Length: 80
Image (cartoon, helix red, strand yellow):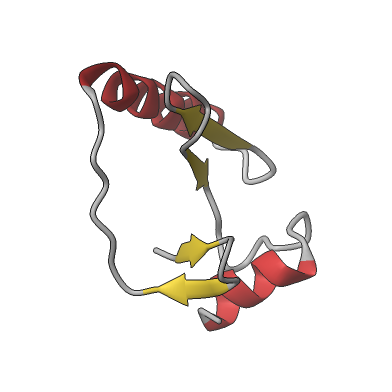
């Protein structure tokens, strides 16, 4: 697992994610779709109703990083 703060351009060790019921359902559904596809080139965005807050979910495999950006590779492989 990697947690990345895009604004600070740094990885984090832990977070607390507060979700409304509909947001939790959207996250659940999005993860289900990603798992069903099994596609390491895909990701999902979960936004709140006002589009002020966003969670992006990415499936990754350390052995299949060719489709990731250079920054994403550093996050996945080195946690930096």
